[in-house]
Image 1 (cartoon, one colour):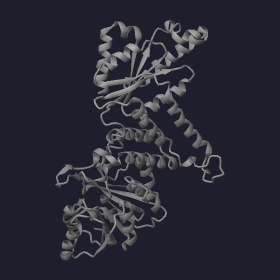
Image 2 (image 1 turned 60 degrees about the vertical axis):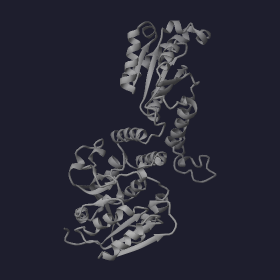
Image 3 (image 1 turned 90 degrees about the vertical axis):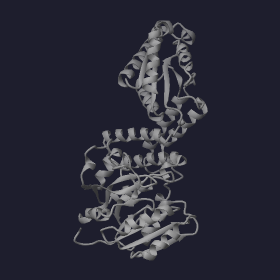
Length: 486
């Protein structure tokens, strides 16, 4: 134990967790590190929470302050701020009412503050269910995509480094019960903190770590409870959860020197969360796009795909989605061009810095699925045929493909190739000058082939003649769909 004991204020925010209160408060009382005070915040519970608290209070030697809201605050982060403001200790442990902790949790975590520059110290967590059964013995699986070795051992490092290569990807502190932090003035962030519904803890850690070091204890001493009443398990919170994930990633990316590698991992985590949170329609497992030039004979492919009971690919949409990409691109360009001075209403770029192009496109693409693709409940793969006119550069198309991959979870592309000489003499192409048209068609055909080489696991090439005449090729396509897409 540290030679000099520090004053730790324990804040227990509660709303309708009467079944867990007794065990939670007991796990706090038996800590091997002395507790300076306990502040119990009840957010207008309608169950037996206060009765359980009073029963515990009668027997406990802890110094307990009880604060009762007669009207629910609507925000756990408001409760956190209230508790921090009331706290008279120098260190804060927000011990959520439904979690538990090992007796040595506080003693082990407080050792991190022996380094006077440490502002936040936390431990590894176990995951338990509603009946205290251990679901996971540790939380390391959640950080393996960042680093498979760092969290195996205790460490202390600069908070800004942790922000730059870790918190830009995700919140790696699974719940606030696992952390203790120095009490500092939070008035500068209190209003923004209370705007968060899910990621307020992430934002709080970000604010803290800008001002000091982080310490980590590799022993799983916090017991983080997962159950049906938790905020993260409620599907109604999913769109907000995802939105706040994007907000935090972009906030850090904007203000810290994030490497390309860390940002790539952040984007992969974003895609994973998009699927886990079921941001689009939960029955859809994949999105499939067909890209080709006009008059390629792609209709046979469309018929073959739509004959499968679990697939529905809609027809040409006159490039609607490519226009959504263009809008995303223009918003990014506008933000970069406008700079920071856009808060004055007389400024021509007034308000642009408040716009988040990524969230804008999420909403647009979600609406595209709901209003254009309109997949029925039995459909597992949906998408559309995208006829490309030849007025876009290869660079533009590269970015457009990335846009499709980014905004549609688990998306894949079929590039459909045809006899270009024949295509040039078909349909609307006959109106074009052949000498000008053929090089453009050949160039676009080469781009499709190169794009397949770049994304071999997410794209598939079909040659019109081979597909039409060869049953084996059709079977190969079906195998690709069933093995790669489903």
